[in-house]
Length: 160
Image 1 (cartoon, rainbow, N blue to C red):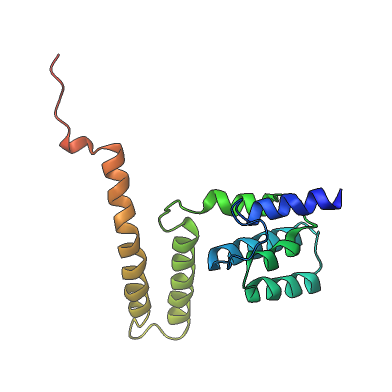
Image 2: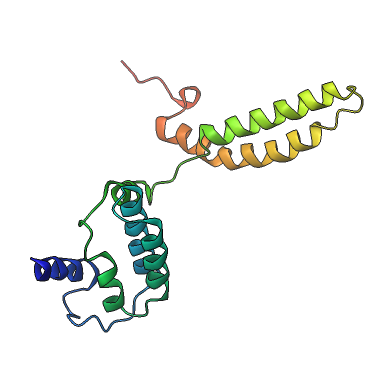
C-alpha cells in the first residue's frame, strides 16, 4: 500500500518522461507543495513543527524527487489546496473588505480629529491618499463590469 501511495505522489509531481525525478523543480512546483502542506496543517494532518520542517525542505528542494516524500503520506488533495486552486487565475476587483477597512479607519481618524478639538481637518490627507488608491484600483473592474453587462445608455432600441 505504501508503494502505491508513493507512486501516486510521484505521478502528481513528476511527469511520465522523468520517472527518477532528476528534473529540477520549478518555483511553482515548490509553491504547490507548500500550499498542500499548509492545507494539510490547517486540516490537522501536520503539526506546526512538521509544517515548518517540510516547508523548509520544500523551499530548499532542487529536484522533483526531493519534493515527492514531503507529501507522500498526505491525501491526494485537501480542501484547502482545492480552494487555493479554484481562486487562482481569476481576477477580482477590490473586495468589500478593502472598502470596509478604508471606511472604518477613516471614520476612526475623523472621530480622533473631533475628539481632539476639531481644528484643521487633517484626516483629509489619509482620506484622499488612500481613497485615490482604492478607487483607482477599482476603476478598471467597474469599467469591465459595465462592458460585460452592457451599458443601457449606449444601447440602441431594436426595431420591432
